[in-house]
Length: 308
Image (tube, rainbow, N blue to C red; front, top):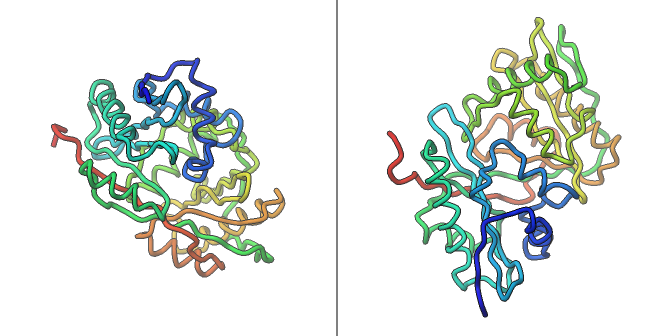
């Protein structure tokens, strides 16, 4: 078997799409299943184009590795995405791909202070791979599931008004401000700008403007909920309230709105993803009928030579 490695170019587009749809990788790369999703990834402002490399065995694509670099209040971190088809694992392909991606990041994203990766459980091989390369457990995320059932009507706090996202300048700015405030204290919080949000929308074929609701209070955006559809499930993909608007029931009302949207859109399964250390959010979701369906593990490694 002849192994070769190549930096991504447009001629590799079909090979990349085939890789993320390979049965052994499809679950891990669910967000990239939709038509146009891999093309969207390439135009995401956080994606580092030079970091994307593919592996070929006798000319057939068998793996890839890439990275997104996210701005953080304390620096920046990379989110690595690595996949090798099952039949070609344990041959050093993943290690070789990772080395090429990290080399590109060291050259083109020297501002980062940390590298991270993640995978769905069960994945003993992934955990062992992470450990061999110096990555340590950092976090669990929970994929939570809610059986289809009647959704209680949202009870909106007094003084709250609702606006459907229109993609315009005002909504982009308001959403960005509320998003940064709501997640400022969260793990791996990535600082947003209106331009980065616009880029995300362009890169996400599953994004629907009618699936994003903005809640206003005292003239400012105080909360938001975004829902979207995947081939086999619906997801309340983003939910938050600003710190000044907590404790008034706004988060619960927004969650119920998101579930109602999934019902109207025809989702047969309702899910969401939550940081396993976010006790407040976990309590809310359990109270609304969600249970843990599976776990996603995050590994992290400080970047050697990063600025203190």
